[in-house]
Length: 374
Image (cartoon, rainbow, N blue to C red):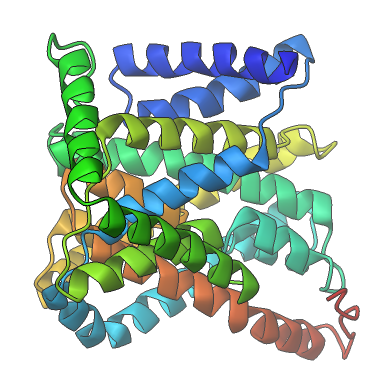
């Protein structure tokens, strides 16, 4: 309990500081940074219950699923070929960056390739255990640097570049520092309470559906199930013509806070001994992929009826949750961003491992991959 209280105090300070500095996603990136700095310099161990992280993901997923409409569903179905093209090009570009990293740092091509592909930190680390020649520590380090680079660079570009510094109410949190912040948070809770009192059966049904969707997503082994399950459930409810209650801003803020803490605790910067040599190439490769996504998004915005901001967040090599949160904050099309990100993640999880195994066997003289650990 003392460690949890310490975690809350440390990360609260990080959230407040990043908010005062007007950093995008302050209540996710602030706690994340606070965890990394605190554990690195004090050598103290912080902790955060997985249940809190899962609850935060479920809240974010539910809130963002409400942005789905029948029109967005039609647009998503029409852009499936573009999703495939964007994913293949992003993976190919990442492999090109991985080749250069492997050549100039001395790490194996298998490690560099798996460490560069934007398929999720934990998923890629697990995959590295099944590919011959891949070093788990190298993959974990490269994926960590990629994740940090993307979740800091992309929101900054989206807010201060493509959105011109504008943050919409869709972020779920009133602008901190204004005199109406506390009033807005309180009034939203009162409004939500009124919805519960007026329609208790409907509200209870929504809660059951969200919890059931998360459970089903876990059973089906979906990526980020506690986020993806509720977002699909809320989207189906909305497309069906119902109007479930929107989350109060305070709940969105708490969900981002919880997610930031958990992400920070999952990042181990000291997982590799020769990190100084690998660090600049990992950062450069990550920035290059982000720049490639920006160019790709410009082309997509000219071909499809979507803004450059939406296209950029859709094709960026970040996590689905982080990009969806950024999209809601800057007024981009959340449903489109989630669709593109989900397609890329599923493609990388289910298709790319077989491609990598085949490629490494073919170009390494027939070496076989280690058997899967299940």
